[in-house]
Length: 446
Image (tube, rainbow, N blue to C red):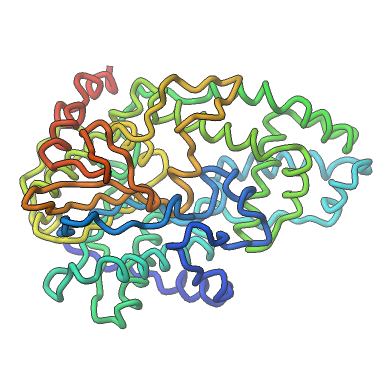
């Protein structure tokens, strides 16, 4: 397979022409600093869960004393995007119902008289391109000392255009931060029509989160729907329409980089808490712990991770592409920085297969647990990332895992107080992945 260089300068230039420097260049290492404002409070942005802009969950902490870093593997979600085509269709239908009425009796809806829906679908928005570019800059600033001209970052992406564009914006940001001393390229694109460890496309028998999502929707949405219908007599909105109207606070704001008028509806109807929990349920029962065939969709990636950490060939019989993973040009084992670009659903499957964000009890679709550890806003916001750092700690190979800069407790591999576990212990802890999902992979095709 020929190596691919697919830098998308159009996205990069558009991103920089449309964003102010105060938005693009915030210090992403300072968790106490406000996330890019977009005219919306941080608490509201974070309630958008999988549609939240990236922010660090905690300040980055260097490896503990006595440990030296020798390899890094990044797994990153694509940057902010427009709604998917299906979501866009539902959003347009809901807005159309509101705009079809003769008059509004609720001032919250008055803006709809002159509102025109102008969002695209599926692709990165300029803000999302800038997120990826900035993530590349940050990666250079943090890890460049691991590299040399002969040892540059090795980059892969799943084949969806928004993922490919995120990867190439990341490589451009990395190159720019190095004053073009380093020029990483996107080397491998994994087709989502085939074996792909960066997309959840291969488990045909996997269920969905629809039942749990709909149960929560029927719990929180009826009073909101009633309020909207009262303010727009004749609209006849459903609870699903209400959810789609709420989602426009995120999508419209991110697309136009300024507070959307839909956010007034979102906040007035007490949408943040309800919307946030909907996202938690959606991922938990979609590809997370609540989906019997969710975690198995992440085992191929974990087996690739183990191979690179241990410097040994991939051992896997699930999602991996044996041809690519068996070729040192398309799956090298001798690099010190790897970057993979993926989707939120696949990252959630990987987290669950690995043992991250484990819940003490399943999420209740009718009642949020305020103490839950499963919070999607801290897991897979737009441009969210998991970083696995391989360390040498007093002569012992070790690892630690960070998600959005927060060092994970990693109890599953016996991590110490510094949240570091030995490489051997980490590998042993991943028996579910090493055993190809312990029978679950076969169930995907039953």
